[in-house]
Length: 313
Image 1 (cartoon, rainbow, N blue to C red):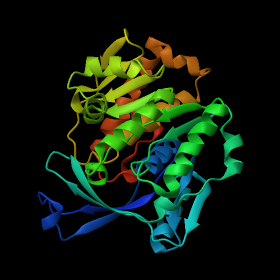
Image 2: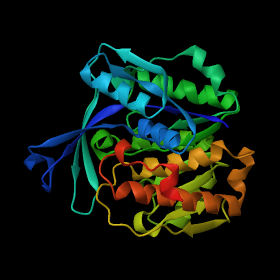
Image 3: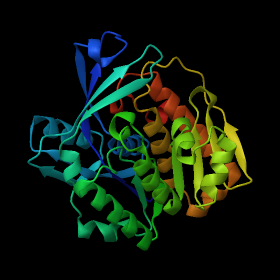
């Protein structure tokens, strides 16, 4: 079984209560562990995979809570750094349909520094780049890019999810697009939301978007479509929409992370990375991942809502 290294942010989600239409009116919040790469690491672990989180939290009570949460989820914390900067916070508002918007108060996540000892551990393993905050400068961005080079040099399976957040990139989306396309060009597996695919390819036509991405990458592309399932694109000519199961969405916060976490857990047990181009195998794997995403959406919270293997039977 391959190890799955998830690089990026681990933070506190303060989830608004009371069903208000915006954060402006919200006056009660529930504290939850969050951060897309951390969610993915927990999803892999819950589905009997072997995952490690690589990121930074503060040396404060919130950082303690987050470290303890990962340990309870059996996620490896060997490469979790503790820094003097306060732990990153995200304030989340849930709409009536379970969709959400974010406002971030960035802190410790940006302080992640490069650990040379980690690079050799990537050899023929899986490295997932899924940080929403990774392209905002500072030590994290430099470290993130250096680990991408290390993953390539060590023949790792590279997974990428840009995790676009409007609040973080509204002032310079062109920079986000440029940096995301670089990672897409290097990745073996690319997971995008419908919004991200259209933004990055500058088109509302998903077929055209897939052709655009395949012009720069040999990777397999998964575009999640909510209730419609997932558009699986193996190359410029092979595409299919894989349906999902119907659920009443309560909170979609961790659905995309559950999807890619489930897919990576399945890939970690596959005999070869060439399986990414096997249409029958990938169709089955994406179908299970769709189920993981749907299961998470019908529950509250991110990590707390993730499925275990028995939930997907």
